[in-house]
Each structure stands twice: as structure tokens, then as C-alpha cells.
Length: 447
Image 1 (cartoon, rainbow, N blue to C red):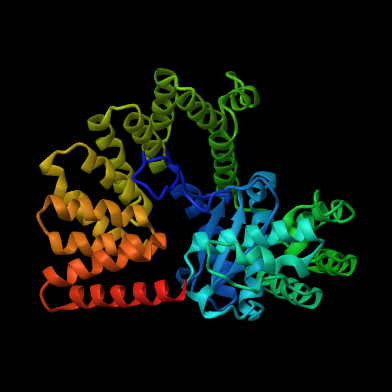
Image 2 (cartoon, helix red, strand yellow):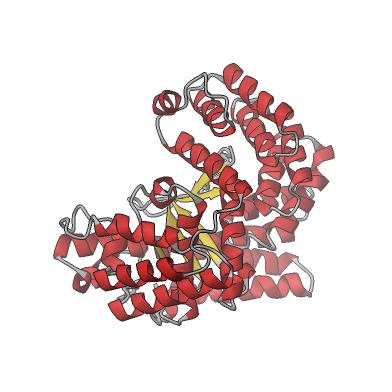
């Protein structure tokens, strides 16, 4: 499916895929369609802030609460609860503009070197632990204890902004929105939702309020800006709205029980979001025949949508029709060749066919994808398989070393790097193996 939870072990290729985290930590959702939509909305904001859009990493956390935060450099995290609670793209854009204000304003806590080296899953585990500590012990002062449990990294500081920093990020967000001729109404709407929760007990508040203190003065400031900005009435582009509605239906269909999805999107609702959601619900039941009938109808009506082909490929692949899944995945990549996640999914299917004729295509797609998905352990794992089947054992070992680093499994990373160094000739690849060996040794010594 397009909505894939990436697991640390080799797993079935779900479109909605989360990286498996610590025992009780939420997963990271990986989905090409959702990520491309969010990046499309965020790129004008990043440009207005003077940031390189390609240097800002956006992660979606599978958590139903309202929350977003920045951590570990230019990493922006957003909960699925925030995406599902929003009513239009402008609300998500306003939230991202605010978080971008923290990045551009240098508000990020100067974490210890461990945070710089921490994997994304470790950062999330630490943030979740810190939020739990705040609830259990009565506020931000207790967060350090929660951080200590996060993936064993041992940080003692946590990103918790002051009211002054929040106000500064608000001001920056409004500047970015005006510069891109977008309304700040979405940000105001989000704040007004949070305002209703401010007086709840800490246990009932959304995490955003515990890390981003909200005040009536901040809300009044944004409301005043909305009242006078020339861009406040500017609507979202129609295509953004259409993409948002489809994305929201898809996300809910993958995360909620299929029965809930079918109750929400009735059979007589022929809108694209409703058909998409029902296809996913039937696929998850599983009623493959009904799911394929709906997705084939969408492909017929919208033959240039790569994500419909992607979903069809996943349906077939996960139900054992591996050879039949090759063509729809290939079509998805053809329609959206600049999306690494699609290449990774298509390559996995090619490898699973055990068809030698597809091996070069899979290898090339994976080698290209890891340039952009260097922290994706699945991509490195599949690339190691491709190299191994090509009898390129040195590069297979190097790919397994990269997988170990992406997973935070530094022992395996070091062992595979040593193996690669013994096989590879002098050159860039052998030097990379040596760098991984040294980095893995350093990380093991610190733990």
C-alpha cells in the first residue's frame, strides 16, 4: 500500500509503512503520496524562510494526538492525529510555518552530540518518553527523566520552547505566509482548537500544549494579523484541496478499522476520496476482488495517478500475486520517477519474483533511491539482496553495514563494514566502509 510502516525486519511492502521504534513508541508512517503532498505545501514556506527544502526532513508519526515538533536539526515531525484533525491544507501549512519559524529562528535546543548522531527512531522515542514524563510528574521539569529512557541514547535535555520563542515563531510564520501570499487563518484555527484544551488536565491535553505553551496574547496576535493581512481570504489551490481530501481519506482508511471506513464512506458516494477509502478498507478485510474492482475503476478514470497503481500493486503483492504486482508498480514509477519510495517498493517486488531478468532494474532503482533515502533501512536491505544475487559480495556487505547504521544496530554495522573492507578494492566504497566501521565503533563506545 502507499501508506507503509517500515519495520526493522524484512517485511511485506505496505504503502503506509512505519519504521518500528522502541517497544511502546509510535511508528513513523512512510507514504509517497502523503509525503509528496506535504512537501508540496511546505516548500514555499521553506523557501521564504531561506531554508533548502531538500535539507528539511519531514516525518509522520503514527500517533492520534495533536502534535508537531522539530528536533535533531532540520527535522520536522507531525502526528497523524494532526493531519486527520485538519479540515484543509491551510491548517497544515500554518502549523508547518510555525515549526519552520523555530528552525529559522535557531530555537532548537543545542542537544548533546548524541542527538546529532541519534537515529530518527531514537529521537521520537526520546520525545515520547519526555512527554510521558511531563504527564506523570507534572510538567517540563520532569522531562529529563523521560529522555533517559529513549533508545538508550541518554540525553538529558528536551525541546520545550518558552512563550517568548513561541511568539517569535508565530511572528516568523506570519511573515512566511504573507511572503507566499497564503492565509494565516489555518494557523489561527489550529490555535483556537488548542485553546479549548488549555484548561484540561495534563493527562487530557494534547502533547503540543506541553511543549508549545499557548497564551491568549499569542492567539490575539495571530487573530489581529488575520484581520488585516491582504492574504487572509486567499483560498487553497483547488488541486491542493483535492489532494488533501484524498490523502485524509487514505490515511484514515489505513489507520481506522475497515468497518468504520465503510460506515463513513457509503457505497453510493462516488467521490474519489470515498472510492479510495473503500478500496483500502476492502483490501484490509481482506476482500481482494472488491478492492481491485474499485481501484481498477479509479485507474480507468485517472490513468495518470501513480498512487492508484501503487495501491493496486500492493494489494496484489500482499495477497501473493507477486508477478502481477510488477506491472502496476512499474507504472507508478514511470508516472512519478522522482519519488524514491516508489522505487524502493517496486524494487522489492521485482526481487520477490526471483526473476533474474528483473534484477538489473531492481538494483538500479535501489542504488538511485538510497541517495535520497540514506536513513531507510529497508532500502539498504533490499539493495544488499540485489548485490548478493549479482555476486557482488563486497557491495552487499557495505549495504548491510549501511542498514545497520540506519537501524542504530552499530555492532552489525561494524561487522559488515569490516567484511566489506576485506573484499572491496581501494576506492570510495572501501573508504565508506572504513568510515562506517569507525562511526559504529564510536557509537558503541558511547553507549
